[in-house]
Length: 411
Length: 79
Image (cartoon, rainbow over all chains, first blue to last red):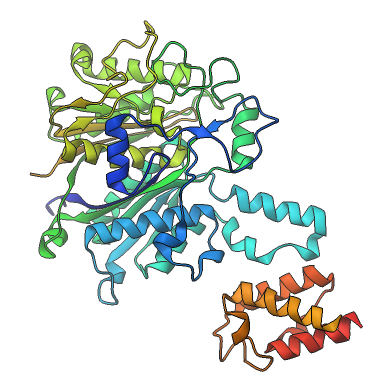
């Protein structure tokens, strides 16, 4: 039998609401600095809610130059910028000899809505013969991922995974499977979402936002929690077959240890009351790692300040880890960047790599009022200085898609 | 009036092709000299159609290879 491939992370690029580039992002998390602010991109006067994890200081030409920029809509600009940082960070030189060995796999779900909406607006205002042809290529779901391949000449596979809240870890799993099948040697795995009036209005109308029925704040696990604050951004990692990374003398950040995903569709937009899918994902990730329960140093939670989500994630952790759950620090970076939806899992991975290298656990900010349903150690309001070797990253939401990933420090 | 249209078209093409206005002389060939691909060509036609509210027939598109021809075409269709 073929020996199972070991897979490592060798590069990282982050464009986040609270920091551009990995160092700024890590520093912000360590200081508990939020990227949530009043929205500038569009007028919010008709909404009761005003806040988002909007990236207001992002200048794409600083990362990508000006040439060709007008062909990229915001999502592609965010993703290409993060991809550029990840490629540079990995030190992988992409050329005609290795381009077929490198792939791109992106988790994104709402990214093309803006183009679709603008195109439609043109059709209604100007008539169907006068629509803006330039918007059309960006209307497909895989536009952003394809722009990464085009811009950086990556000719291995290119795929977009669109499973909502768990897209990031699902995309990572897809890429890992490709490497394990020996079909590819390295993959840029990204997650991206961008803020627009369309997706803001959609979540608002579904009653999903904090501030509609309570205080407008992202306070995961806190009793006051009443909905999400939307965020945007892109996070990209370079993952590689270990032998390939060692051969080229790459600096290795971390090792892929275990991963699992599970669908538990229950009812439209409802959580499974027993949170079976997330529990099974965590169990699967634990089974295919070599770790014991006591080896998990930190859990990066998917908790997003939605009452049921945070309660059920707590339950899943308790049910899987038993009494030991009370010994594991759990925190949610969504208290600082908001709910970035399909990009959430990759931001958690980027943050967790920082935890391993800078020796801290990011805090759950805005934690003030205890809820009896959420009774774990949530690292409230202040980061904790400690050594981290193994992190469990959860990724789930209403809708049935669940994923869990275990990242281990490379020694 | 016609000078205005010339300027408008030159600016529009300059933005789409990301080429400075001064480089867009009337006879510089879109395809040979400026590497315009089919997608960009469609974008120019679409922007032109939207601005002047005219539909360029399919058979006329290949005849327009430079700015001079585009301006000439506009003069004919807008009178």
